[in-house]
Image (cartoon, rainbow, N blue to C red; front, top):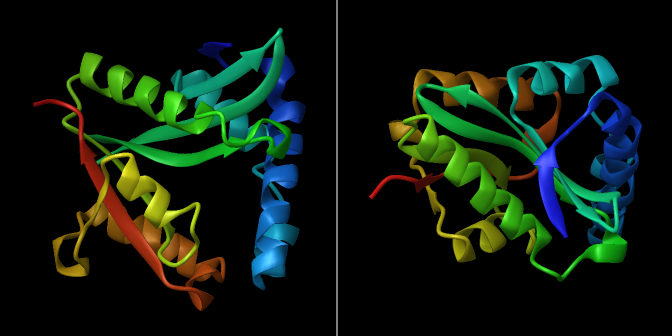
Amino acid sequence: MRIRKAQQNDLATLQDIERAAGEAFRGIGMPEIADDEPPTTSELEGYLQAGTAWVMTVEDDVVAYLIAEPIDGNLHIEQVSVHPDHAGKRLGRQLIEHAAAEATANGMPALTLTTFRDVPWNAPYYERCGFHTIPDDELTPGLEAKRQQEADHGLDRWTRVCMRRPTIS
């Protein structure tokens, strides 16, 4: 297994991983999430150009990815997905740790993300990875804007939370 920067020829695979990983939502009564289209290749290209897209490979096959962007001085994890064939091997956590190291190297004091509060592989998982929920009255302007984008996309049908994890001790 190896983490490397995502490349242009990985983009279709990232979309395939997202679709496959999203199927788990169907089984918990969230088919709208399972049916949601992954980021477009042009959206993914923005993360490539920013240098904030990483993939996990197993025998040169891309099996997981993480994309992120700076928001309010922190590195915001936009998406981390692992193909279901490789779930349970701590690949997502390794990508999160890689993102934390990248954030630290760039002087960013924390990782942030938004996620579903009550989905077992969302907020409860991220808590095990060291994230804590940010109270709504403590959201930064960028995180408030991110939450509004999600609400506009219909994600507020289910409870969402913003989470933070320090990267610099």
